[in-house]
Image 1: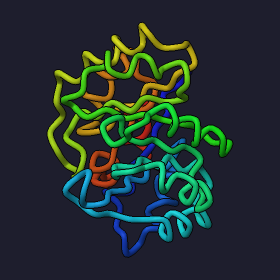
Image 2: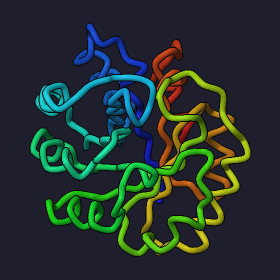
Image 3: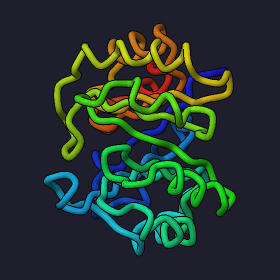
Image 4: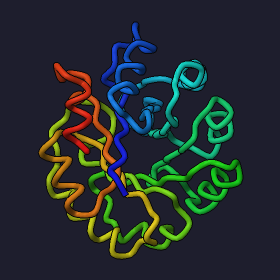
Length: 211
């Protein structure tokens, strides 16, 4: 399958969010990556349910919602109702991972599971048959613009080897045309990029270079 490009709106201009969403859609983005942070699971606060609802009204591509929050099970249904097409939560944030996966799937949307740089891929092998997506973080979650942690790329082939053929392996953190190609060459088929896309003088070229 072709690489799925999911620009992160964390790097967009929040005062001109509709404009910046249209820019990446016109550039060929497949999904829109929305980072939700609660100031507890990660040391930053971003956006919540009302903003996702507003984005849904203007976006024409699926909303790829990444919950970097504690107790994700409490908010899954609200984010689905706000317009999320994919909900990814953190392995490290859930007491009962499988029940959260099942909850997401019961709502008729795709379920993703994310792991931090310090989490080994083996810890999530048992969940792979139930997932639509695994998100490998190649920076510490919380802030955009961080440097890519190359050691994390070793998780990609480890998960690909264990995963069903249709599992989407997404990578997020420090992704550009060079690090993105490293990830896809190892078996990733979805890339999240924020700064690289939004700071590029030619957004269409940035998206194309990742693909």
